[in-house]
Image (cartoon, rainbow, N blue to C red):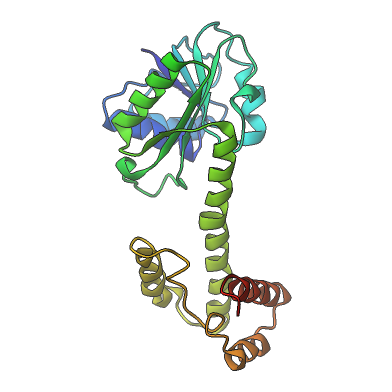
Length: 250
């Protein structure tokens, strides 16, 4: 089977790397950014092109959501299998006379960060059972966590991921603004962050909650609000505490 990965960003890099580590050959990486493609090619010894899209049995489109439809039109081969890697798009966004699917890895990717691919969940969807089995088998060579998912369910998977990852990381960034303002090294907070993350591996997140809001400690909450001079930080602080109180009916 010939596999081509389209895209030069973090997802394409890590998928290509995961495939390589599990003896799944990738015949080409195709995209627009030559320097990024060359980096992936040099790292993984996979041919790349910015001009000629090779013939393949399976194309994996790893580009931004807004570009998936446009990029999918570059594939003119009929009756091949084309899958995008988006968590928030239907397979029908793919525009061509070929078999359509999705191959969604649930993870945040950065080229500079090594990952244990066996722990990354993959959610697969296709138009036919044969293609579904093919994508499942490919994913199972990479990961021990593979699930068939409809687009309706995948929308909620992606929404959950935004809450659990993107929002949490934004809070880290806001927290660092506060620690930086007082010249407190942010890495002093990393043990706390690690413990919080590890705790929810054994406890329901709702049961793991601590802090002044769940204790309904109005004195501490008020004192914190008086310390915060940035209006955006203050708005986040109040919204988060109100949400905690409502969850625990305080």
